Image (cartoon, rainbow, N blue to C red; front, side, top):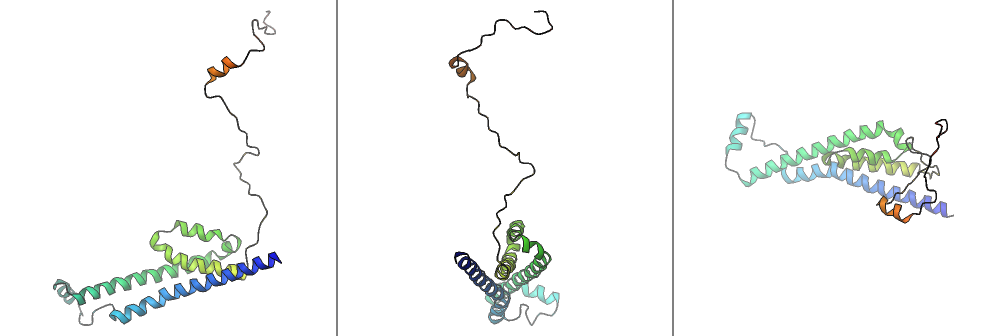
Length: 187
């Protein structure tokens, strides 16, 4: 019964994670353009039709509408960069799906290699993929011991005194060496 409850709890956690991640991802992909569109409209001014007109517009004194238009352009550029990152991460996770089926830590390793600006899309898509994989096929427990090729079979530890002179004074000599005979030397 305990194993059944643990598996059910794992599937419910995976379903909640998948639903929450999907909501956040769709909110960023669809909600951000909606907010920008409602707040500022199209990201480019309607009355500018050439580079010369754009130069004249930028040469004018800074006004509140100009600042809002510039912020809208920055907002649209950020959204486009995020959308590009999401598409790139969808491609990466699709290509690495067999590896993720075997070892879900590949997601964490991939996110750790990304820069801060590229990690938001990877977190959204990767968490969604890993949660869906956990919902579809929960991870099984392995009782295998990891082995390392460079690791010695037995670890050997040796200790030495900090000051060898103290040990020589404290240890009595049991076998004094006065005369050593070397075979074949005639002594």
